[in-house]
Length: 459
Image (cartoon, rainbow, N blue to C red):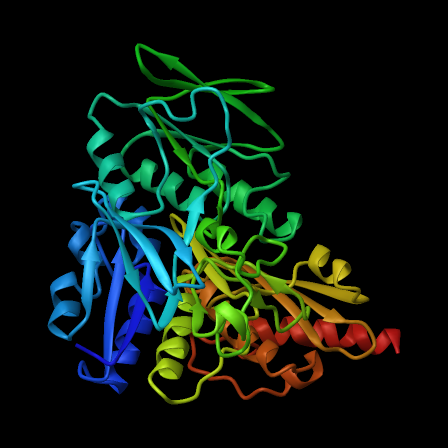
């Protein structure tokens, strides 16, 4: 085999992108590539799991971008059902265990990629591990949840009102269940400011989803060996199925035990080329995906943002560098979109509390608009909130809640953030105009103009 060995721990977005990019640049006679993956699937879209559960996606195979056999045909030694249990940086080895046979082994490496992802937050509450309580992090999780659902089930309780929580609430509605979402925050979608989250709350209740906020879950009631209700400080919510949507944390236990550098969130810290520490035993170690922290280009701070788009980019950067070329990952502005039924939600950059925590003085501008010209039948409202630095006018963040393509308008704001544009500069953008679907004044431009007026008043 190859003169040099690359071992990748984790076979999803970041790990397989790194392996594939390295293979494109270096042949099997130059670089041996071994991928360790504890699950049964590789290169799949975890973001599509709610739509698999709802039935919109026809089977798990539809979410798989590239099968294990396809990777193996390209000269990648992909080992499924194998877990990495320890790292010895001095000996340059990984301790592994076959989860089927229990057999333990060691594998040496010259280069190592940590793409261990993230794990769902599962608080140590009474009954949390009872049958009928489901996380939705992997395709295996999705299959277990789908198999659990039965025609007799009538009520679902979703714990957590973030991206996964609201998407799983929609999935349960689509399956015909009565749904309650229990969230400890003041409003669902805490990635938005509360005034924008209130719009999501209102829309969800309009879809017959019961949303209970500012409520702490204290346990899961278990009856006849299965979950029967979610218990909170404010009452009991009966459930035939409980879905956990409490977010994730970086899966960095291996890295922590090996003494690799972790940030405040528990994610691995890397340089611009996605290297984990340079020098000593950490030479030749890379990390990407949901297990790392990244630089927030707006606040200048490091954050943990678990998104497949970033993970794929990390993997391409890592594989390019291992392959002998040069690539960097400069950071993110925190752009994400989601939906619940026909309500679309988009955000990028900083919320008000993020801007305040970073030390910015800022102004906000909120406007009501439509996704198409107001004269055209079916025009529906959207709200756009824009945050800009006081005096300079630099754009700091944008949030959008609405319908009819509202969320995709966030892309314009994301590009403006990446290029550190001011709200005055945004007002001069020459955006596409195609009536009736593009109003004469695009909602982003209207919000920027209002924010620019506020900035001007402060000067």
